[in-house]
Image (cartoon, rainbow, N blue to C red; front, side, top):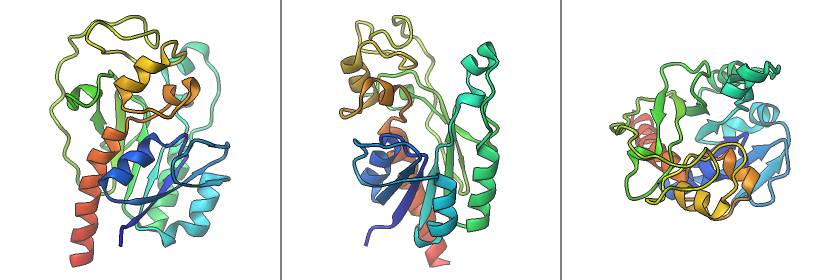
Length: 214
């Protein structure tokens, strides 16, 4: 039987597909409708759902909204809530293996950073994301960013590399660069490439195996 993973603040399912490929059955929860989420989906408050149902799962991934920690938040001085801290508190209370994902600048504890350059032949996107885990996780080497590409979100360079952020004018190029073929313009701008969580998911499976053996 495949282990079950709860995908909180799930969006359109970029992280979910990676975990599924790694070997998990995934259930997603988000406050907004997600009609293209590829697995079982529950619309509702993610933290409330986890508090009630989290212990029915083997592991939890959470991607709290990142707006508070983005560059544009600092530029525009807009106030957004910090959901990283209450998410971490709840996950510690549930005492399950967990992953918290967010953008550089978010207050994650000893996170591992992943970038598309770490997955040659799979991704062609410069997209840094941080992952705090409750288990030990290795990360690939981070090659230098040597590619030049158009303004972020507006297309790929001659080799197919691009930065996917904000307004994605070339959705087809973004789908190829991110390894995602089902999302809309708005969805893919916020997505996690499935290659990231497939990589994490294989290590999470090993951690679960060690926990059960112990």
